[in-house]
Image 1 (tube, rainbow over the protein chains, first blue to last red):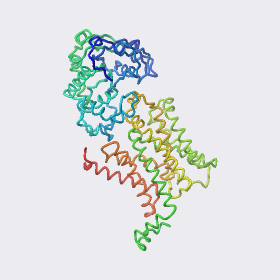
Image 2 (cartoon, chains in turn red, green):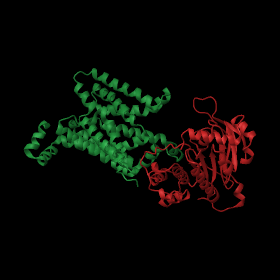
Image 3 (cartoon, each protein chain N blue to C red):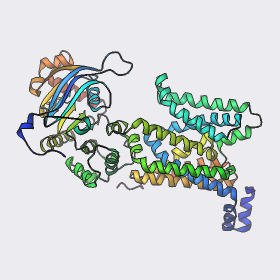
Image 4 (cartoon, one colour):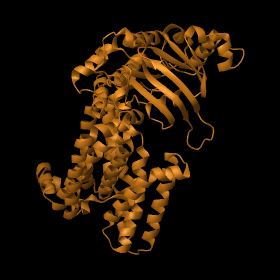
Length: 267
Length: 288
């Protein structure tokens, strides 16, 4: 179960260490990501930023084991090394790859996950209510997935990830396709989980405002890690030129991304 | 025999005529086989729609014609060779896709006419088998034999046992393959299992609707049920029910109207789909 004891000693404990991670897609000689090394501290929010095609999703999928790359990934629990299965990783995928025309209720969606999940702790109904309460969508339990708004849907996907009782949550552009209020609410829920449930989050994002507000550690990725640091250290002109090319200011970028998102028809 | 069914109704009244009709052994066999296949097709059809591979059943069904022809050529029970041939095709599809680096749709589009052409070609070496070919193309459930009904009942029992154990992981894999991998499910194995189940049901249904129309029974009732459902549970219950109604209604109508049973079932299922569309567009299905 989740360790709710607030031991100041494990505040800075490492929960995940990635060493020499590389991945090439089959049939491509150039690696999608290479030589990546970083650590995640317990109960922190870590954000990966980088231009499109910089390998953010690939990196997350290699950590999750969905893609099999070269890597040394070590998971820790209170200083002790643990296996991938014991690490209980929750995942919120990037795009909504679930067909929302399928008639399935939120409850059925989560029950189906629970019943297929070897790593979930219980299959009790109480657990479903619990995860839905944590993300504030419990009143939609018997709604069809397709009838939810973008923000509600995204929180249901987050609830699904919580069924693993995760120590580490991996989120791939969770704000894609939801409006600014839903986005803010999503990150508040997430911040709550980190604070109260002792979760460590690793998030790929394009939203610099979100990075500025919520990130404890920022990882800049463009095939390999270009820089790591706090939001304050990273969101500077210099690192932005390095990451996105010249003439892009940190907040110009925010602007550009927003324009792109509106034109791109994400809503 | 049944050409004069309308006259019979006029003479003996509707109820007596139907009692007479249902007492005919070949009608009983047709209805029993049809209903069993309909239940299976209704359930597996839901999975097919979730996976968005409506075309897949068509490709498997069409390719089974080559298997039928090979069986007839060598004097083996044709549905047995059709089953073996189709399972081989189903299992080799992913490998073929990789080897030729083509999309799923693309490879099916090649395989479907290729196998069907092969089937017709072998049939052309079997003079006197042309009427047989027609019944494999469009089905003729009224000619089903008692032994074939035992076979269909066997397939039903095995399929239901497998589904009762594995329906959740199969649905999970169909719904979200990536997440199913993360949950530790053996996604590849579950996919192959679904494909083999689908193939068995298709081959079992060849007598009912023929290789050209069998996919209708997988796709149309499941689509109608989707229009009318508010939950996965409802969908999985409604789909086989609508499928059974389509087959039952189709067979009875075909006898009444003296039309080919396979085609009548397909049209009957289509009409139910239109009604379900109207109901769902009029928003008669309440959102829970």
